[in-house]
Image (cartoon, rainbow, N blue to C red; front, side, top):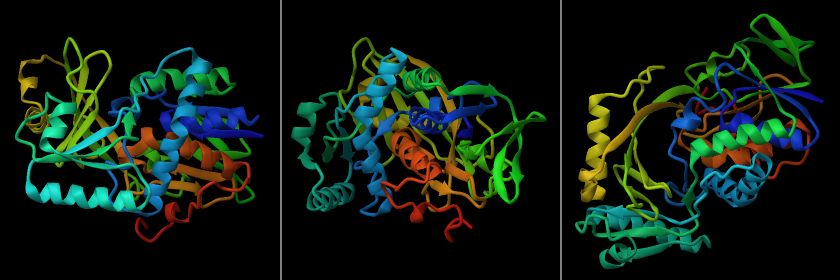
Length: 366
């Protein structure tokens, strides 16, 4: 079986790796360097519980993917010989107001009733485990099973792992989907025909621009997120820390990521003065001592956004066409489960999770 995957980000490479390990001949078509867009611009947060709005199919999808992460990391590191900075060190969500504290308490209660690990901490308990945090906090929720991964290291290792598993990478622009007898039969890459038994479109914010994908630019559109990186001699934090305004993500080497904005500016990726102001204000509110650290990098990425903030997964509008897009802020987290269910769908195997809530033609995005 031959499969063409359109898009070489974390989702496309993960799907290709899973298909290749199942014996499928797989070609990833990427117009740039694999992982050059949102996958490298992300923060690498793996926090289904810290970011959960409540129980439901999306939380189940995220929890399933988090449970797959240790084996996914082991596979990628083994095949590539590279480390990816996986840190299942827990995530804190801190509160600066009583109202925020009440919401966190309710979330902890709900998740504990669902059998998930979550803990409500008062101010003193928070400062004992993260002493650099602002003493003005009122308390926090701790989600011990959440964590992070260095997404740039992950992308480098993942693309190498996929190549070593037999995935072929082709640089080019997909002009159109090939259709034969009402079925997806490959893609046109810069005027050359790439035949395939199935096509997986995993083009992130550009999915709606792939002719024949079945999704319009209105259904999956770019959401700009700006980020800032600071550097310290030793890590300032042990865990990812959220507030209601944003987050800080520590790396083992002392770098600290601060983010992020949510802006709808088309495909513009500029870093703006307003965006930097917003992010740095959030960072300094969480950890006032960051004011002494150097800013070493800033960037912006385009995340694939849907109106209901759910991904688009599974069978597309044509037989042989499959979609893996709309992951918004959770592409890094959802890579393992997306690879699992897309490979199952392509190979006509039983699905480990129902994909009905993530259909391409669901009313919320059509």
